[in-house]
Length: 93
Image 1: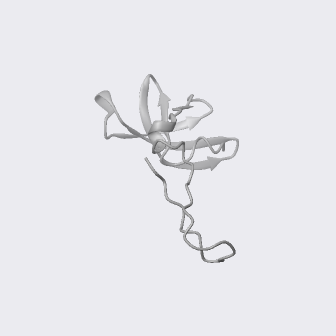
Image 2: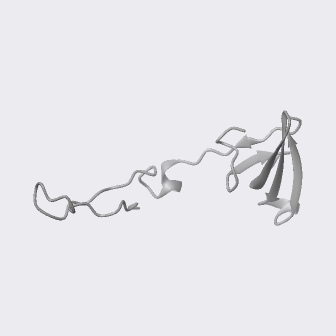
């Protein structure tokens, strides 16, 4: 399974937008449970067998990742040489 097709990821399939709920390897195929995000399928869950069903990951731009493209910013608190000078990473939008 590719890292692009993990639970929580949005994909296009059958002309609609879906969210991957879970996946399970079945030999060379992978069973995906998808939840509809639009249209008549919104909120409903269906099973798709990949690669027989094509799932195209939806690419999200930097603005969808908090405006920083998922990059963490570290703030310095302390004097040079201070080993406790870094705060935990924080995403800024």
